[in-house]
Structure formats: structure tokens, C-alpha cells
Length: 499
Ligand code: SF4
View 1 (spheres, rainbow, N blue to C red):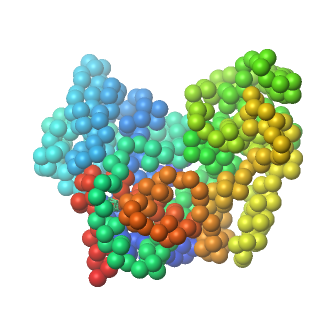
View 2: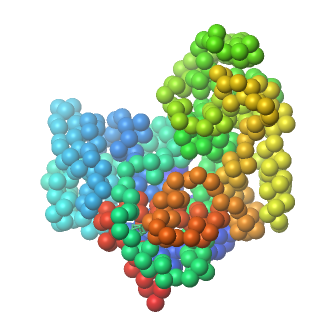
View 3: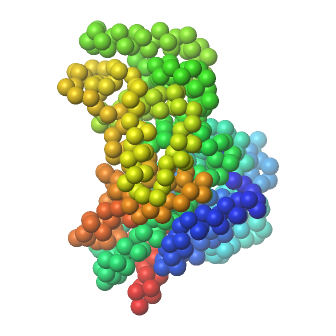
């Protein structure tokens, strides 16, 4: 799930990974990744590879937050209201309500969240009036700081152990950009004014080094997960997540965790349709009734699915996902989860060595590698029903529609295969530098707009690596900036770098 303790092996792995992403270090040099972030993610990255923002999302979101928390005093704590997400200076959440102990005493006030308890002191909140209404200091790691350094009565509690105790929890399920943030906008942000004076080579260098930093972090996280749960399972989870595209990525990851790869293979015995029935049945998306409005082929297909699923249904009943775990409205028919599950069934029920196959493809030349990866995703054997269909209610299309289009495969290459190969210590330099851009990613557009100004040239980030760089900078600096850019630490760093 996540690494709580460092080991020599982990440190060595980090060192090897750093050599795969030499420009990641440049990113930190150019941007001087702010001391605050350095403290939060770098010093502790041997132990915790996520950010303070991940913890804020957990506190804010009931579906992620452990229901019962234990304060360092040993008392039980229930969150009645996590408070308002503060997008300006000061505590992370305002006006929260928590209920404590057997006498259920209620406290109302602000919440501050850190990775380590000692960050309260490091971040110099002690004695700061803006933090005088704090009622709870939350950290990931356990620990206790002197009570007199906190406002009177503040409770201290850590999330780490409670999260670890929940097998269904994964930091990877948190999309940190899906939670509130004050989007840089309005006037041209100061970073964009400075970057406007840079030439294209300098901007490219910044974006590519930031892109390497992002891939380095992803590779480290993937390597950690692989050591805990195995290469095939992690590759399966990551590809499933990518199949969910942006709206259903979390639901697909959950499905892959509910039906581990080995179970999918064992229960389907290499039969794609059986695997599909299991995925569709457990997802909760199998239509409960056959509609008479559907054509004969559709009705017969759904009956076939139910013939398979009803035998399994009782075994999976308690693990079946609710329909509302899925986003079905407004998504392109090609991306419908039930179509994507057909791709997953084809990929994962028949092939028991996908990870070895990916690892064996030569990475010496991008075009060859890309072609070979595309071939592995061609899915010649699949569920014939979906070959010319986009939905149960739609008509049969005139030509075949790929279950996995080129765009999705590129996204899988970038987000899954590169980190996977790097975690296996397979050179990826040629791949990294040639990856085509991802299409239709709003966060990339928002980040480009903020950092490069309204009239920027999109050609500046027409590469997968540079796009990753934009996202990295946006995550590092923009997502948690509460000063409308005025105290953004990137600005000073790039200003001094320019001069
Ligand atoms: S927060 Fe910083 S990096 Fe983001 S747009 Fe504002 S000045 Fe630029």
C-alpha cells in the first residue's frame, strides 16, 4: 500500500532510479522546490511517497477517511464535519466539528494537517495567530509534540495506522487535482511573466526536467508497490486504472483490487467471456433485466452473460461494487466501462506473462518499441459482440471499433509502462524523449495556461515528457498555493535562475 519504513534496498533502488532520470535533479535545482515541499516530500520520501495534499484529500473526503480515529491521548475521535477547505493563507480546514471520547464532547474550530507531527514546528505555526483556532493537529506519522506549542486543548492524531488497517485503501486512488484548489487565473501569474523572458530551449529544459521528476516519483511508487504485491498484479492494476480513463480510473483500480489478477485467471480458466462476466458482474454494471427495446443479438449476449454470472453471483455478492461507483453520464461511448472491461478480459484472462512480454521488448528505438507495444494491445481475440458496438442500446457500427485506441495506449505507455520499465531498471531514455503528447487532458491545459500565459505556443509542450513536467510543476506549486500566486516560491527560484 505504502512504505512505512526505509530499508537499504529501498535506498539503493532510489539511487538507481535517480540515475535513470538524471534531469529530475535539474528540476529541483532550477525550481529550488520550495523548502516546505522539500521538507514534506523529500526528507520523508524514504518512508512516505505521497504529499500533504493527499492527506488533506483524505481528511476532506468521507469515502477515504477512516471512520474512527484515535487521538494520541487514546480517545476515539469522530469527524462530524471536516470543515471548509481553506484556499487562502492559514489552517488547512476551517470550522470543522469533531466529537471526542466516551462523553462525546464536541469541538469546533480549524484543522492543520502535516506529514510528521514535528512539521508544526518546522512550518513555524507555533505562536502564529492565524492558527490560534486549531482544534486538531493531524499527521500521517504517529507522534506527539509538546502540548504547550499548540493552542490549548488541541488534540493530536495520526492517520497512518488507521489507513494501513483498511485493506481497501490506496493512496493511488486519490486524484489530488480533483479536490478544491484556487486555479491561478485572472491576471497573468508572475511565473508566466518570468517564463515569457525565457527562450524555448530554457522552457523545454524546465518542462523536461520536471517531467523526469514526475516519472521518477511514479517509478519509485510502482517499484514499492511491486515489492509488496508482485509485478503482474501491479501492472494489471495500473493498466486497469488507465482503462478507466479520467472518470472511471478509481473504479477500475478498485475492480482490479477486488478481483486480483490470479483470481481472474483462475476463475476464467483462460476463457475471455468468463473473465468478462466476472468483471462485469462484480462491477455491478451488468444490466439487471434484458430490455425488450434491445435488438436480438444484444438480448442474447446479455442472457449469455447472466448464464455465466448467476453461478458466481453468490460468492461475490458482498464484494460487488455499487453502480454509483461508476461515472456513466457524459462519457464518450468508446470509453464506456463495459467496453473497457472487454479489453481487460482479453488482456488479462489469456496471457499469464504480460509483464515479461513488456519487459522483453527492446527499448533501444522508440518507434519499434511503440509498434511492438501496440501489437500487444491489439487484442485479436476478444468478445465479438463489442467489435462493432458502442452500447447495448446503440446500433451495429459499419466497421470495427477498437476496444483500445491509440490514444489510450499512449497514455498507458506513459503512465504505466515507462515507470514499470524503470522500476525494473530497464533503460527508458529513448522512450521518454520521444513520447507523443496525451490528448484531451484538462489539467495540462490549465497548467500550461497558468505557467506559460494565455498566448503561449502549444508546440512548447507537444511531447509526453513535457506535459508530465507541466503537471509536476502544477502539483508542486499551484495546487496548494493559497496566496493567489503572491507568495509562490517558484517565482523567486526561476527569477534567480534567469539572472
Ligand atoms: S502558483 Fe506559482 S507556479 Fe502556479 S501559477 Fe501562480 S505563480 Fe505560477
